[in-house]
Length: 150
Image (cartoon, rainbow, N blue to C red; front, side):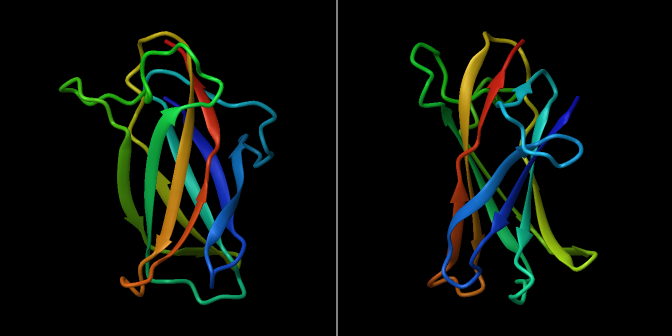
């Protein structure tokens, strides 16, 4: 089982918008190609919150899985399947801040890839939200891609 690291950064904490970053290797260097998930692997998304803003008590995170734009003939939009056989296209969670060395981060973990099935190409749309003001949450998103194999 491998945790594939996706490191994202909030550029502007006050207006939301696009997250920057993507999948990285163990040294934190951006991958030049999409990672390949195998049986038992998970995606771990770490959000870096900007030091110039006061971090919220928690962020919510939403994983949305879909077929990658380049996937033309694959049968499923997500590689994640529950034990009952139903597909997981969306999963959500919350994370509190962790501050190390002056950097505030929030961490979210996907379900484990059950394995099986043909190799396929997928896109993760990850949405982070500061729900401090529920009537007007501030949201950010990014769409890194990944592949699977049996």
